[in-house]
Length: 316
Length: 265
Image (cartoon, rainbow over all chains, first blue to last red; front, side, top):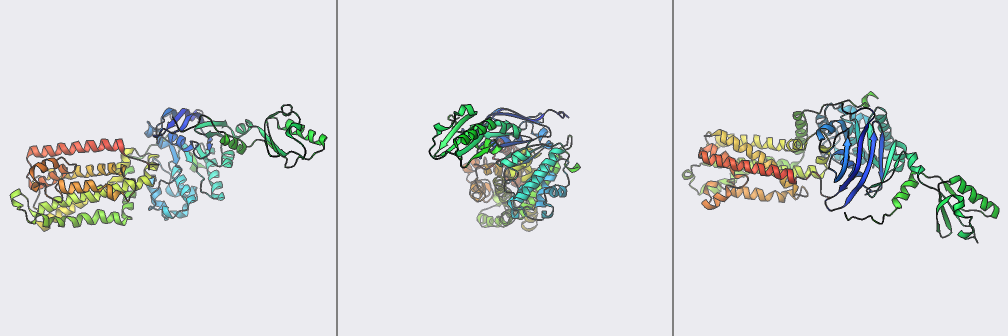
């Protein structure tokens, strides 16, 4: 084997993807995924998640930068990489007139050392559906069939593009459990999602993509630790923002006032909250709608998604 | 959890097994598409008989032909055009639009394998149909035994390969399976008239015939017919083979260059 247990199974360096029309979907991103890790690419629609994953899967060659999967270029050295990876595309990919069983048999015939077809279907809870045509499956069942086929070759590396979109709550939980079990038995998983709880609960590490760039990355805890916490409240009647104690002394790094609602951002939540409450206590006023919250992944994600880059544009 | 443990270094499936798996699925799909079955099976069986009135007024013997060989050549030509070419244009477009081709490319199959595996059922149907139609023409229409069978076989094989490659190429310029009916039409019409299928090439005006000899399916049909009647000189046969080879090289190159694996967004 040309890879050892500890090196990075996926390595991405300054990756770029420019489409025919000149649109730059991926604008120089770098990250790596270690063996046995679940890595999530999180982002809004159009952030560049699928454009990135397609380059990792070897479906297209990058416009710039470098991708290595298991030490190989997944586009140029396709034959070396494909027997060791499993791929679930964002949508479709199966003839609607074939049955689940026929589709699975076809994929098994094209996959070296495939696990038994029934076992693959059982893993995703489709054991009883072998005789059903693909067109009669629900959206969630189709996602699970796609997952079953991605697992057919018992891959070392699994690419899952929005694996739980269209699944109900139970199906989503089942998929999460399966992905965790795969990770625990040594499979490396790269998934994309726009569900925050999916990334937070499932991923060992994640990267938030925004307009083709990585806006934040690390473990879920690291990503949220970077973000300021938030305090919001309504100004008491008769008070103005200038009546508040000096914000810098409270450790506040930014604030917004909208109508009577004040929102403070701070990296020292306890100090800012204490200062504010002591001030309110001394003044004898009630802070209505008081909301003190530490940074969550959602907070991080939303504030990144709100950021507008002045240089952003389709021109390339 | 042993069922989930990844293997160390799996070998990929052998090419023959992969092609068989893909071709089997493709054949199942063909069988479930009624209009595709009609086009592939009935049209080549029915159309050759429409040739008869066209040749009735012509002195076939003077051209070294008879009704059997003319019908046989037409039948094989129609089989190539409808059972192979037209049906494969639809198949390639349908698989592309359902993202099947894209999904296949994420697996172990190489690009040429995907194209060959998808083409196999239609090509085999074209082959079997040609054999059945030839036998029919020999038994019912007195086509006689082929004088140079290797030329007929060679013509049939190049025709099959070329039709599959041209179908892949045509699919690149076809947006939907419905429009495949239209985009496949030019080659079908041109071949029927100019390549000696609906009209025997021998009865075309000389100057027109010289140009038509260069059409994509002309050499294949010429080799099929000439092999049967023995009416081709060595140089004519070599010329036809060279033209067929040139078209095959051009078509394969064009497929590599222009084939679309994913729908246009």
